[in-house]
Length: 202
Image 1 (tube, one colour):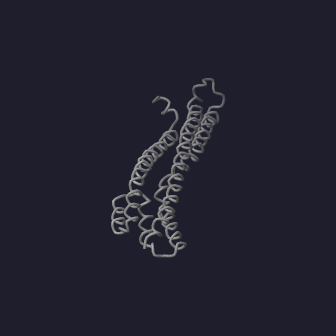
Image 2: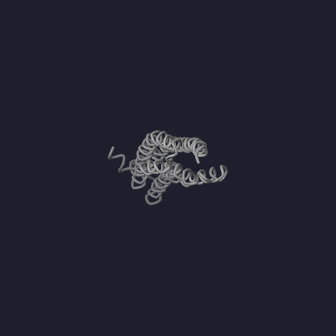
Image 3: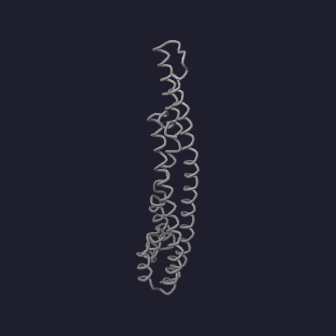
């Protein structure tokens, strides 16, 4: 394995290093989505109960105990509960848009890595072929094929590595984007329910 890594040259190491942020982002987002899902289920039921009793200060205090994006939406809904329904919905919608960067944090970086990995592999391929032709240019006919092996190995290894990194990265990006969209959809549904609950109270 080490021999293959050495044959691939520095470009191969760069390609393989791209896997590190992908794994880190995947793990971080997985933990984040799991945490906010748990927090939101508890938060919404507790806040809804407080609002139905007219205990708005208690509901706001509950919002301060969680980091879930829903907490920010609930706070906006409660603080603007005296606005006309249309304006209240717009305020909650704006709050949801402000939470999008937190929900989608670092996910675009996975897409970038998925796209540049094959290009880096192609760059390694071109570099390896250039190295092989450079040998031919200096020595003319080469009787020993092993002289060309280094350049050819680099070309093949970097191409393979680019694909190996790109495919899982694309899968990770699709999964993360799906989870983020699911969170956003859930927020919209809960926000609309909150507006209905709040509007029933003075």
